[in-house]
Length: 134
Image: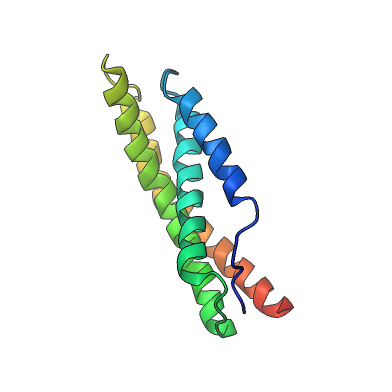
């Protein structure tokens, strides 16, 4: 399996993320908006990491499947953890009390293991498909 040198659409996603961030900052806290922010940031970080450390490298099928599975797990966990970071940032920027309720914070905490497991399985599945095609 050979990892692509450049990930298509990553620069466009970065541009969309920059615009979204500029629009997101002044808005009041909304759970869906902060989840989108955390997930998009995780995707960007993972994509840039793949390009930097794996771009153009060839690995065996087993290693490739493990890399995609671990990447999926990192995406799931990273999405949840970065959502917490952006919840804190949003609350700090607006400085008028909590932007998010305790129920919203608890919900993100409670679904974090689910997101990690689901994205790990998605990464595993994508790796197996890629290994079968390659």
